[in-house]
Amino acid sequence: MRVRKANFVYGSTKAGLDGFVQGFTDSLHGTGIQVLLARPGFIVGAMTRELMASGVTPAPFSRTAPEVAEATVQALRRGRRTVWIPQVLRPLYAALRFVPQPVWRRMPR
Image (cartoon, rainbow, N blue to C red; front, side, top):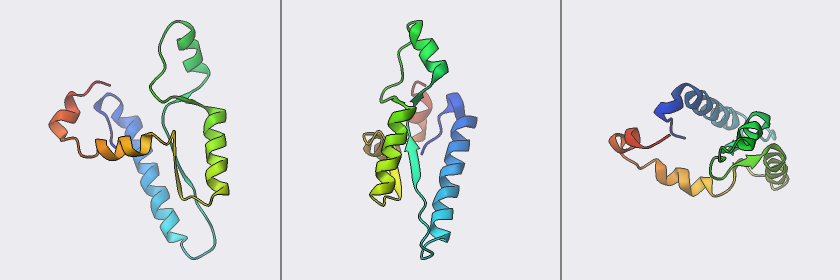
């Protein structure tokens, strides 16, 4: 939702894909085709597990791939158009949209 300076290239690709999916979903409205936009936070994978084994703390609200998959399946079953994984990210990112740019620049990674 908002790109950080520490990884703006990565963040911008996610933001661009998010925008594409929103437009794609709107273009398919009325066709009977449903698109689900999954917005996962940090996902713990093999590389992250190796770092954690050496004492690195995982990012807040981290989830594993099976947890993301389960949340995605539940959202599809419920007919949702968007799913935040974990759900706590939805209000968090809603609030972060209102942080002024000068403050945002000084925030830590």
